[in-house]
Image 1 (tube, rainbow, N blue to C red):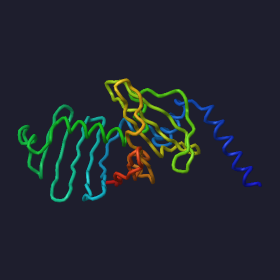
Image 2: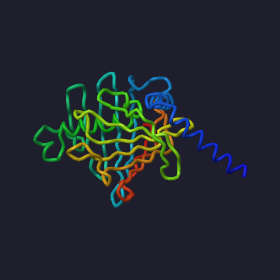
Image 3: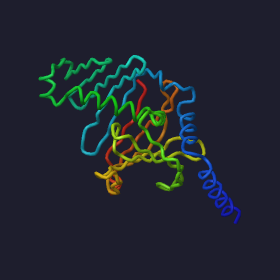
Image 4: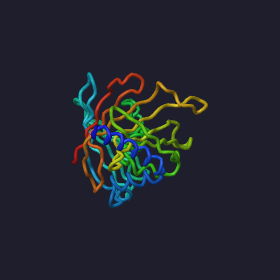
Length: 239
């Protein structure tokens, strides 16, 4: 009986707190947890990400992000192939197995500076979360949702973006005890901006690796929203 009362008390407290805290306050608290010293804007580090996917060889990427210097690079190796993209301010350089490529040669290898910028935005966004939720063009819904996901209870924030930034609808799941970001999920939208239920993916975040004083998710496992099909896992390593 005491156990049941304790459980009931927890849920009552949990739901009351979710109603009281605002989305902006929740984002502030999760940033304080992940980036307690405010290091993201001066982030300058190199790290590795190993991507494991079903029926394919692992891909190991060495990523360099230097925000103050406006520098980004990614060198990815799978089997015997290594591709490299470097963005140094406005200058773009590409390599294929250590051979520098001009535009024509890069096109033959399905490489481009547009792809380099895509990788830059991808890695900077995902490893810059939750700090990136304060970027211009990010629209935080005022209501903090209460959701149970995979057997755990979370405080959840819905996020949309200006059209120039992106059309997907994202949900970020935070641990109600320490405000750690533990899940994020996105859905595609139709031409009218309505959420497409069977679209998109969810990402489970486990373990942590501290880089430049920032607590980053060490393991990210990707699944389809539609059928929970497993897509792959990214594992972060300090260089």
